[in-house]
View 1 (cartoon, rainbow, N blue to C red):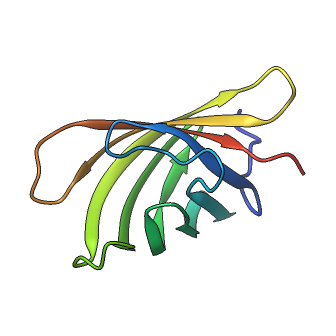
View 2 (view 1 turned 30 degrees about the horizontal axis):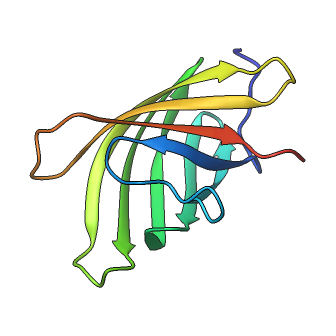
Length: 116
């Protein structure tokens, strides 16, 4: 996967230990990548607007994120590590282990690449 590039790929959350995922309007992510630097944005069922930035080395992504939730709360920030897994049809799955700032509870989410 060293030739992998996530630039322009879109993903949708399929599961999360931190919140219920609405299958009809899941959180969606747009990834950008250049020279191993990752950045992007996301929104969806629980998030009004989110941004992330980080790095990718082979099949592992490390990033920091911040978002505003639809329940009107303060901005939420944290850090995550994701592993990129190939799916049988050529798309990718991201398995993300993350923690919110100020909360030591480990969380896991799974996102799958949307068809082109």
